[in-house]
Length: 197
Image 1: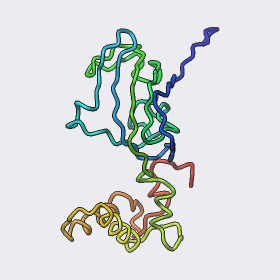
Image 2 (image 1 turned 60 degrees about the vertical axis):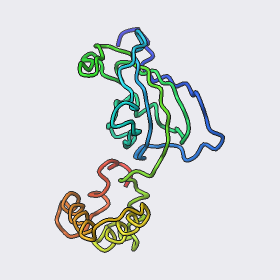
Image 3 (image 1 turned 60 degrees about the horizontal axis):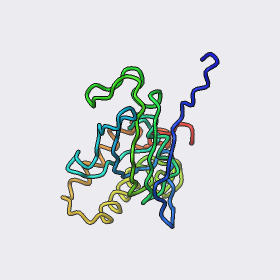
């Protein structure tokens, strides 16, 4: 690195903080947010979530690399309703390569304006596992997951064909029960955070 102490970190400016700031986002949470991206060099906008995907805010899991590293850092400890303006150095964005598709040149510093709408427990959080694991034996049986799906379906109130439940259940086991023992262990379930269990 030599003697140059470059501040290669994300700068966060809070533009709006709601009175009740809870829950705060953490690694593994499922976030729903709108954000606009600008090039720091000339202020030109390269991304606007309001014009993508029919204007729906983006859903993503925080801290697992679904977005650039700078955004994973910038959206930690953020609460629903909060707005931030964040400046992300190239090393935590698209680096020396840039990102031609989005017209981001090499070594570009990026600015994002972010508005966070929702913070949910992530689909693979330890809490979610414990919630499904009713008998606390650290593995999820077909019955436990089946029960969980029923509750989830009831909660969102969408009408689904009964067979959808079985298809989803079969799919969950196909994708998660790696050793084929008919149970999904904590390790199999928790694909995101191997370090916590």
